[in-house]
Every structure is written in structure tokens, then in C-alpha cells.
Amino acid sequence: MSRRRSSGGDDIGDINVTPLMDIVFIMLIFFIVTATFLKEKGIDVRTPDDDPVDDKSIPPPALLLSVQEDGFVRVNNVRIIDPLSTKPVVEEFMAREPKGVVIVNAAPESEAGIAVTVMDQAYLGNANAVSLALQADE
Image 1 (cartoon, rainbow, N blue to C red):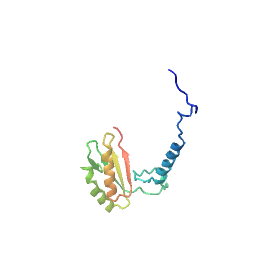
Image 2: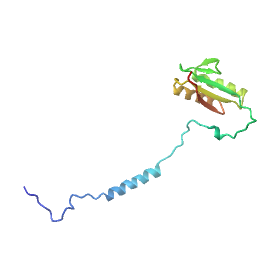
Image 3: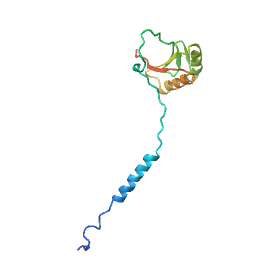
Image 4: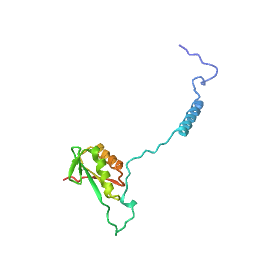
């Protein structure tokens, strides 16, 4: 079996990819230009370095919301409530103490979603500052 050779040489099997690359770059530029970039709000994390140190200042009053392993929340280690009912507690605290802060103290074995729900309820209750802490293992 013999093969027939064309008189044009080996150019028959080559594919010119230059127009393909041009199209790919044009599409890339199109998608970069038309893309919309949204800034989503996440959890606001403040480190101690953000605030200036003032030795003479008195710490603001704090409301402690402890998220337990069973999913309930203790308010200042006294009463147990549902995570969705923390908003009125925070509203009442903020009415008494306008410069107060809310501390959400989560147990190591508690669900993260419950702690985030309590933080959201605290923000809905007009809390100025909400801090998240992890309970120490005993």
C-alpha cells in the first residue's frame, strides 16, 4: 500500500490557531469589562490595634449572650432563651446602655449557624458593637 503525496507538502494537516486565540482574547476582555463586582458584607472583625489605647477609660457595659451546646442562649449567665428571641433583649439593653457592647460567647461544640443568628439578632436590636468569643474548654 502506497500513499499518495500531495505536491503542496506537509501543510495540509496544520491548523491555524491564530484566529481562535484572537477570539478567546476578545471574549476574555468582554467578560472582564462586563463583570460586576459586588462587595458583600461579612462579619466585621476588629482587632485591639484598631482602637487607640486610653488607660483612663472605663470599659463600656456589656451584655453577655452565651450560646450553649444545646442551641439555647443564656443572657448574662442567668436565663435561657431561644436564639431568635435575643433581639428584644438587646433592644432593652441598648435602651438602658446606649454605649454598651454585646458579647456573643459560643461553646466549642455549638453550631456556628446559631452564633451567627445571635449576632444578626444583636445587630437588628441596634447594637453598636458585637464581639464574638469562644468559651474555654473546662
